[in-house]
Image (cartoon, rainbow, N blue to C red):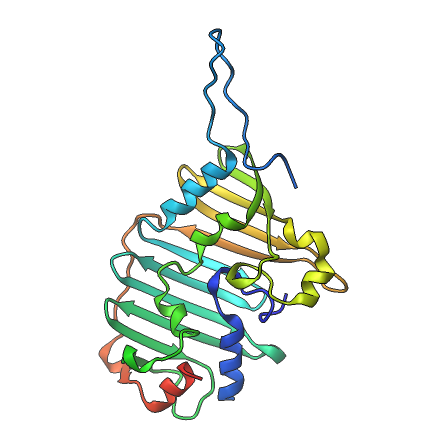
Length: 263
């Protein structure tokens, strides 16, 4: 799974890596079992597996939550509150095994940015307060301000089949073939995957009405072993503890920061 190939959940890992270089099976579709028919012959139909999952996904953005997403290119952790508070940290690995971090905090219209990407004029220990109007490209700033950082609301359009084995588990198949933020863009990879690209297995874990974890597996192809994306969601509806960095640790963003963000 290359970052330029599998841009899962809206995280533009490929663009982050480019900035670094620049600086330096299952059952019938959406069905679950129906309730037993009464003597009158009428049936009370339980929600389908797709409906249950869709409700949990929709609920996710109704309140505050925290998340941890893991893909081969890195780990993304963050918290988001619809009221306008959010934070994110990316612990990534670029081509050649080079490690880097990106951190961001948004408090209403105040933006703070910190990174270990080696760039002349940027101190890896400093938080930089941004003038948002000076950031013209969305690739990196999008990690900081995304209202749906895991692009959960696009999940259901990719779910091909789903079944619910118990109240806490929905499994099924997921379509990677349409590209974009939730799929695979590389034509050669899609050709190698063949029909498997349209039926990648997934498992979603629910806690009542909440989505608490998701795993999507990209099947093996050629000499490439299967790869997995996992997302864990916690703190549903709980206050998000996001605060501005200490004043002593903050500086106004210099041209070098905007050059990196707009690169």
